Length: 86
Image (cartoon, rainbow, N blue to C red; front, side, top):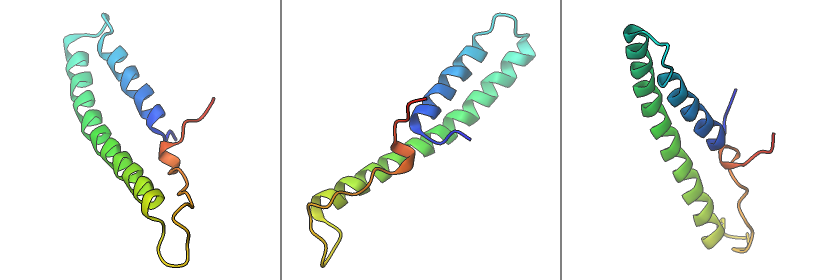
């Protein structure tokens, strides 16, 4: 299972490559276009979720975690935002 924004980016480019396949019939192309539209909608939600996770992390880093915890303590990077070397 791919769970990072880098993985999502790679998947989106793979989808573009599938749509650019010159050997697709008109029917296959239409199916790929529909698939791309669905993937795009899901990808937009994932990106918005990533933006929210990043803003939350930035807020926690700026204002701290609440009483008893120093403001300088940094929030961990959310797993979905981590860049992983493969």
